[in-house]
Amino acid sequence: MNRIGSLRPSALLGSRLLGSPTPGTPARRARTDYRLGSPGRPATVPTLLIADFDNSGSVTSPAGTDPLSNRFAEVAHAFSVVARRGARHELGAVLHFDAPSSGEVRPTQITRRRFVRLRAGLHVPPDGAGTSELGPSLRRATEIADAFPDHAATLVVLSDFWLLDPDPSSTLRELAEFPGDVHAVVLGNRLGSRALDDHIAVTHIERDDPPGAVARALFSSLVARRPGSYVHAPM
Image 1 (cartoon, rainbow, N blue to C red):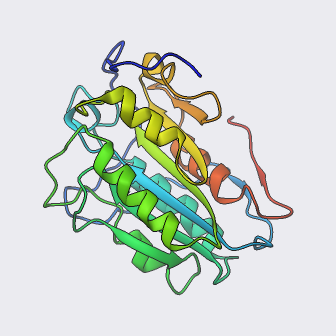
Image 2: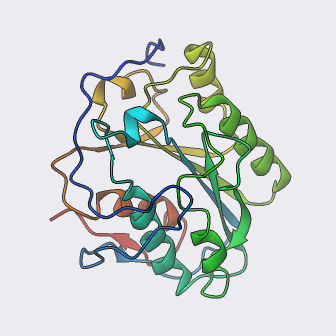
């Protein structure tokens, strides 16, 4: 296991992710002319993907890692591509570091019919305080996974990992113990990812990455258990 400690960003990076919802507004349509890959066919086992969003100032402020919050629009696009060929035994959920909040979407079928419900949680919750603490939403994610023991669970955390939990080391150990796969989508802060457990999958999103980087990261977790799927390499 890597050394775990309090995380501080090496820099607060401006973002090239374009298009934004305002707080409390579902993600608007954004560029979708980038290639994600093929969603393949429905998974042969029940699955559950939980997307957990950090909406703290170090992410959303003008000097933050995603000041325009386009991560929501890109995640919505990734969900929509899979939903076109989705199945009722494939579930998605949305959480925010501010937990509980009105932005939470409980496990929902990733299908055309249910996609609108998933998309409704993809915004900065109007009742959120913009906390930098991962712990509350992580515990909520674990509760959800435990409530669906027959589903192969994946937790995708979208954050710069500049955590202000009372004990960041303990929180990151708890993250490594999540009952399923964990994918850390690290927004701009490469230094922070060094504190993550070795078995956690890590994708770094940098300020110079082209549109679609966040969508492609989430898509890779969405299709991981779908036969015939593949993810396009970034252009």
